[in-house]
Image 1 (cartoon, helix red, strand yellow):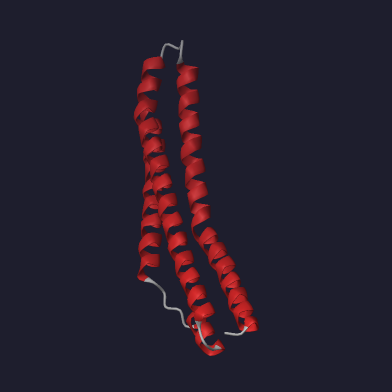
Image 2 (cartoon, helix red, strand yellow):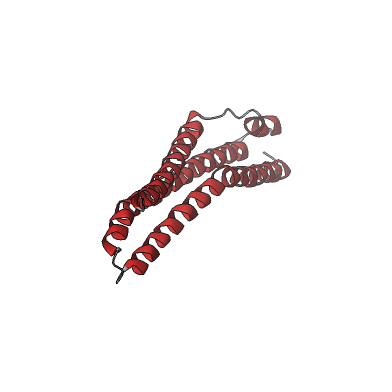
Length: 157
């Protein structure tokens, strides 16, 4: 394939690389950061409640109320980490596919054959698989946050 065709294939690859990187980050990074911040803030608030309760006559009640919620918030943080792993797997799978397309485009004999896979690329099933698991763990983490808040509120009745 001529040098200018190779250069164009690389430019198309780079554009798609940036597009998919941005698309993945926008779709998954915001909920991950939001839930991680909520759960981490709740853990910190739980620790502050326990610290404030020390030396208080109601210390045992407060510590018992916070103890189970603390573990639920920790479970939410673990779920966010698992969701982040699925996000990374999704992104690496997509980029591996793009690299394979670029390699086949560079090895192609003519320009049309080189560019065709970029234009008519099928959506891989693994994308929806990894994305689905990522959103599932984000959802579970949010549920953990809500349960933890409920447990703290219920403990102070």
